[in-house]
Length: 365
Image (cartoon, rainbow, N blue to C red):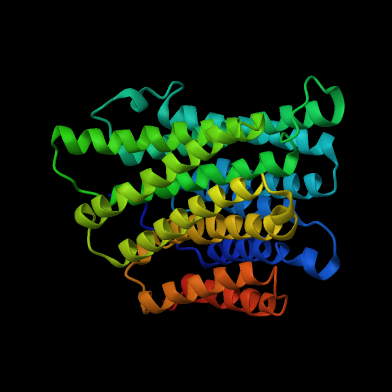
C-alpha cells in the first residue's frame, strides 16, 4: 500500500480549492445547454488538467503541503485552461511548455530519466502506474503545444480528428493511470509467476492499448479502434475477479470497484459511439449524447473515484454509508447523461454533484 505523508491533503483550504475546481469543471459541462456556447475546454481542462494533474504532482511530491511543482502547476494550468478557452494560443503554448518543464523536472528527480521499472518484471505495479501517469502527463503537455502550432499556425499536416477538443481529452489518461496505481496499491496477490505475469500484462495492455487506441482515432482506422476498445474493456473485465479476490476488504475497495464499473461502461459506450459513427442518421440524433455520456462516466465516474481515494487517503474509513453514496454517485452521473435528452435533469445532476462533493470532501466525514 502507498505510504503517504500523514498531512497529505489534510489542509482544509487545499481540499476546498480542489473541490471547487472539480465542481466548476462539472458545471461547465452543462453551460452549453444554458448559454448555447461551447464550454467544453473549461469542462475538460479544469477537471483533467488542473485538478487531476495537480493531484498527480502533489502525490509525487508526497509532502505535507503542496511544494513548488504542484503549486506552480495548479495556477499555470488554470491560466492554460482560460487561454485555451478564449483561443489565446500564444499564451496556451507558453503555459504548456512551462508545465511540461515542471512535470519533467519532478519526474526525473523522483523516478530518473528513463522508466526502467516498466521493463522490470519484479517491479511494483503500483509504482509503475504512478510513473506512467507522470510521464503521460508530461508527454501530453508537450504534444498539446505541437498540436496548437500545427493547427493554428504552420499546418505541417492535416488529420481531421487532430483537433484541440479531441486531443485534449487525452489529459484524462494521467488521472486514469494514477487511479490504477492507487488500485494496485491495495492488491496483495501471491508472489507466483502467474500472478506476477497477470499484473504486468495488465499494465502493458492498459498503457499500450490507450496509446494505440488514440492513434487509431486520429488515423480514423475504424476496425482497429473497435478492436483496441474491445481489448481494453476485456482487460478491465478480467481484473474484476482478481481485484475482488486479492485486494484488502475496505471502504476504498468499494469505491474502486464502483470506479471500475464506471470504466467498464466507458468502454461499452466508446464502442457503441464508434459504431453509430458509421450510421449518419443515428449519429446526428444520438452521437453527441453518447459522447457526453462516455465523458461523464470516464471523468466524473472512474477518474473521480480514484481522486477521492487519493485525496482522502489519510482519512479512511470515512464516516459515511459508502454503499448509499456510491448509488447516489451513479444516479448523479446518469442524470448528467439524461440531461442531454431531458434538460430538467440538468438541475438534479448539478445539485446532486455538489451535494456528493460536500459528502466526500467534508471535514466531518
